[in-house]
Image (tube, rainbow, N blue to C red; front, side, top):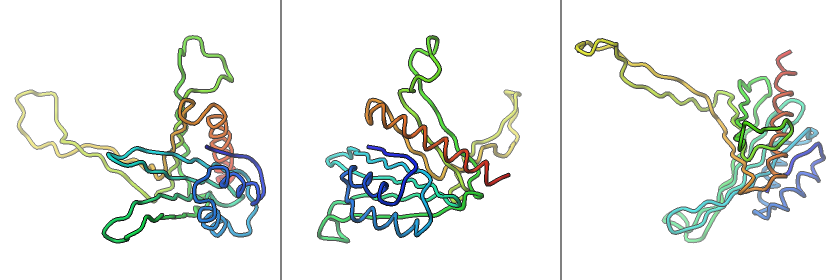
Amino acid sequence: MAKTGTTTTQGLRTAIERSGYYPALVSEAVESAVGTEPISSYLVHQETTFDANEVRRHVTVLVLTATRFVVSHTDEQTADETSPVPYATTSTESVRLGRISSVVLSRVVANPETYTPGTLPREVVLTIGWGAVQRLDLEPAGCSDPNCDADHGYTGSATADDLSLRVSEAGDGPETVAEALRFAQALSEATVAQGA
């Protein structure tokens, strides 16, 4: 479930409660990170994953204010050697809008040859980078000479994808896809305004 919109703290709390995923815990973590700053937009995305022999749920809450992007993620864990009872882990991060270096929105559409503007994609992936996580993919470099045995060093690429959130029509519903698109647009516009 995902909810987004221009709202108050109460609206965000209601969306978190509707997700049904430890609402008291998630609300407290998010509200503590946001503080008294007014909320411009938000997205609440609850997802269930299947891991070998168990079902795991997690929720991601994205909040946009006039100056910050706040991301909160909560995972549930089964009892293990560190805890005899199930537990949840919640983390929040507040990022100044000026630090956001990229907002990437990937859209997957069916039958692109008949696409009509305004039609919802069947899936979107929102990737946001602010430099906290860098991934470096390296591979040996080479040349076009098949007989060359010289060491050409390495080649690769560096990517910053601190957060990637996938929302699909099949798994989350068309309303959720539309809400993710609105949040992505609001965040993209806010980062442009910060750079001006």
